Structure formats: C-alpha cells, structure tokens
Image (cartoon, rainbow, N blue to C red; front, top):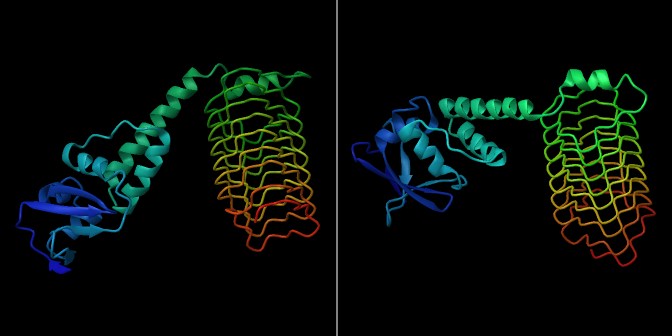
Length: 302
C-alpha cells in the first residue's frame, strides 16, 4: 500500500468492498462539500492506494455506491424499492451525504402519502367503525395507515392488505389476521393475545415487546421479523418460516415450533422451556444463553 494525497490527478479509482469504480476528484468533492468523501479527497487528508493497481480501498458494501456516484454527478435520487432505499440511506448516512439523505427521505414520504391516498379507509373511518359491536375489514386495503393505540380487539382483518401499517401499542386481542399481507408493519408493544395469523405474510414486521400469548401463527411468513422481548408463551408456530428472525430475549415457553424454519434465527437468551422443538433444524440457530429446560428436542438437529 502507498500513501495518496494528490488531488491534482483528474481520475480516482476506488475499490468499495470489492467493487471497482472510476470517478473524478471534482465529482467526489463539489456537490456535497461537507461529506466524508469530499473530506477524503480535499487534499487535507492522506488516503491509501494499492501500489500495484492504483485503487483506493473503502471498507463498505459497494452494492449501492454507483447510486452515490450518480447522485454526486447529477443530483438525482434513483428509483428503488423501499428496502433498497433503506440500504442506500444507511450508506448516505455513513458518507455524510446530507443532500442525498434529504432526497431519499422526501421520496419515501411522498410514497407514503400516495399509499395512504390509495387506501380504502382512513384512521378516522376506522375509529367510527369500531363503535359498532362486530367489525370486519376483510380484504380491505389499509396500507400505510397509523392505527396505533386504538382498541381493535376482535376485529376481523382476514385477507386485508396491511403493508406498513402502524399498530404500535394497539389492542388487537383475539383479532383475525388470516392470510393478510402485513409486510413491514409495526406491532411494537401491541397486544396480540390469541390472535389468528395463519398463512399471514409478516415479512420484516416489527413485533418487539408484543404480547402474543397463545397466538396462532401457523404457516405464517415471519422472515426477518423482530420479536425481541416478545411474549410468545404457548404460541402456535407450526411450520412458520422464522428464517433470519430476531427472537432475542423472547419468551417462547410452551410454544409449539413443530416444523418451523429457524435458519439464521437469533434466539439468544430466549426462554424455550417446555417448547415443542421435535425434529426442528437448529444447526444454524443462535441459542446462546437460551433456556431449554423441559423442551421437547427429540430428533432436533443441533
């Protein structure tokens, strides 16, 4: 490795996490003069260059770096999926690209507003509806609504589209979520006792601190969900997909996990006492500090 502090050269070769890029000092310094990249190539700091190939190494994931360069060149926010915007936002924050951060935030806010316009009901409509004895929102599109802190117990949401709905601290006891699409929804600290989630898509949902005692989550897609500190005592999780789920500190005492997928799941410090784990593959599951007293582990792969 050799030292590199020459900003007079028009070209800069970058190796970002193994992906190669070629740009100019002007591109890296002019649009976002207060960024980390501008500081690196301002001439005030010394950076390291590969003596053989001439690339300056940056220890970050290079997946979205082309979008960062295009932003610095043109000032245009790329069109991406929401999950990709989250990844790009993380990189923009690392490189301290304040203009790009504002641009991404504006796009996401506009999308949320547009999504709310597409929903069939508003929060006010929901509040009016729950005055009646029996409420059903079966098959209704409620995407993006803020339904936090409401009493929605016993409500039937079966087959509804609930993407990115905010249910934080909502009382949903005994509510029905059969086959709903609730990807990315927030159930933080919600009451979900005895709820039915059979066949539901909850990919990436946040259920940290939620009360899910005796909830039925059979066949549910729970990939990448956060259940940190959640109460899942006696929950039914048969054949649920918990791949990459975070269950750190969750209480799964007496839960039925027969046939559940737990690849790369985080169960650090979880309470699995008397849980049913027969024939479950636990080889790629993090069970550090988990309580397994009385758990049925017959045939489990560890």
